Length: 334
Image (cartoon, rainbow, N blue to C red; front, side, top):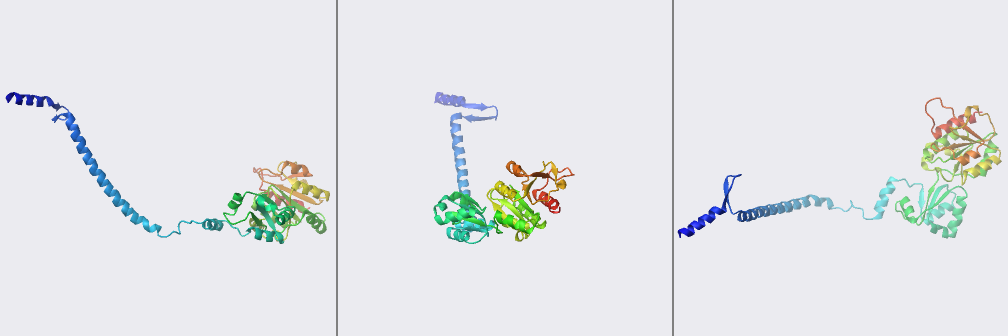
């Protein structure tokens, strides 16, 4: 018994190891690690259970707070009509017409039209083809677009493949403008716009042209702002007293004017002749170009004179509408 007890004690003495770092004894490191793992796992399990309970309580309380916000479905528009109504309120469609029947009646009447958008299927209709061909010859821009593009322009409206924008003023043909100018003035002045796409500039030029007794304004079909509501607003009533002509090709229109005795003068900062030194009194066509590009090269070749405005300050150029007003003041006062 003594031997067995000594052996047992010896084994125990061997199993016990002193930890110098913590100054206590630990029995059999393998068994202690297992116990630590068990204790740690049990503690973790308790923490996880507590967290789950807290999450359930928080989720339940958060659902109580969130649920009242979903009592009504009005916050979530589920129909395309709701989206269409939202965007049409932001954009003014008072001068727009879409749908086959509505557009056909507008084309058949004597209403002024600024621009037309249509799909290729519309041209297969004989009645639409004849009307569109006739109105294009009058200078109205007709743009063939895809169905999706037309839906984007009308914000999802039922357009049936065609839409148009009404003009704020009626236009006359180039021949009518020439006859009117010659019969009402000895030396008439007509303003032609080349590449002016800003409706504010177009409206301001129209206002200046009427103020200085010009006989008309020529607007090309492309690369120019049309007679929209913004143009009419900036013109401040001048469109009611001034003739406007829309042409398919500006250069061909200038050739026609030159054949009828008009001199074509262009406004450019690179012009070698100052407008104050220009003395010609014949019927004139004043060509005003855009601010960034000016008059196109082909149109400059059609001009008989290129005039410039002498600037005294450090500013190198003027706004297109301001340059037009200054030029018309000089040219109509001769």
